[in-house]
Length: 283
Picture 1: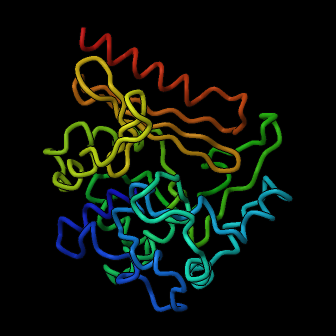
Picture 2: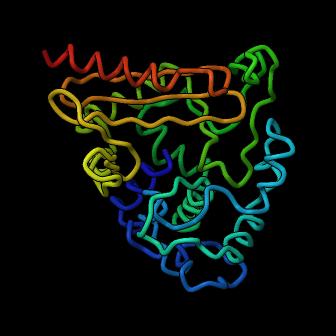
């Protein structure tokens, strides 16, 4: 959702994907490391910024309290301070490292560039144009939200407050809206975000050699019968989700689980099902 917002703002001329991150961030501490000043918005979108997965200060809390959201205590000022103090382990563009840290900074940069708070900006530029009325960034009533659970599948967990990391994982969507999001990618020309939806499907990089993975601005891309299969998966402390689609056959699949553990096979099962459906549709 955040990278689609980036593409939408680029299509409007508000910014460019290759703009410097530092040029669009809110005022904050001076960046201490030259490598940080070389990071672009595209690097953040493709997880090639060189930044770690999360800021170092979040690691002790994550180890001691694995089911408690440390993100809730991170406001934008703290996020910017963490970025200013972080020396990227790798130069931008050199290596692929999935980074919630980078996604959070991308959200802050987009909000600054467009002059609106991230939740309102996502709603105005992405959710409402696509008719996704069942998608929000805030928890709903307890009887409306699906409750997440620990690995045992029984112990409930509170809704996750993502703080300044909203752009990395705060979206809450109904199954209907998850499929609507996929339908927009399968038929971009029928939406107000046609250019942006096409842009986020263009391959950007390949890693891992002949048997590795191709990445677009936001999707993982794998070979499949008739044409590539695009997908993404994510998780919070008590839930998992998978979205994937196969443009050649017009097939899309959304899957979710209200628990998170290594024993939960949601993501590989959903991927295998989508691949099988795509193959049957092409045949």
